[in-house]
Image 1 (cartoon, rainbow, N blue to C red):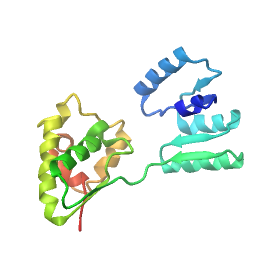
Image 2: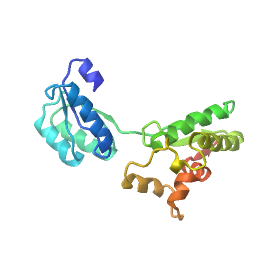
Image 3: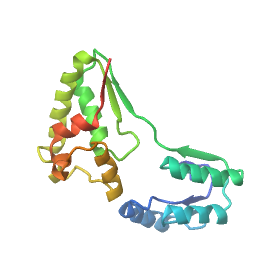
Image 4: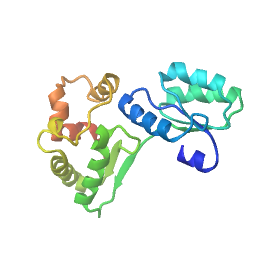
Length: 203
């Protein structure tokens, strides 16, 4: 949005419906600061609002950040109107750790990005590539820094975020396979969490 208005454009902004508190803050800031003719803030469920926006606004460019499924829908609607589109649909975020790396530094950088906002951001690491002779050292360092950041009981830590909704919680639980998982185990046992969420691919 900042780039668009800096270039002299008007903007229609649609926030995620899955983050209502964030959306409310954004709405307050934008509506108190800008005229709706300059920045139009549109709320609502994407499946309903996005087609209405595409049909009722004349866009010169569409920028979308989100899921691949919704990205395809937006891309198709934009293509029918020959509107240029920029899609940011996530992807993979590997961490590559060389044999001579400082494991304490690497562990801190991985943990802060993996667990900030409960990993619900595009820069959260998906997997780690580490030399086999440094694997255990990295695991130990990750356990140590995670406890430094969030303590022995992360679910009770003020700085540890929660999953944004039930659907996303169930998506993460599905990573654990068919094993019996209790909610407490997911949120409080950092060693178990780390061993399950990080795939250590050995070289």
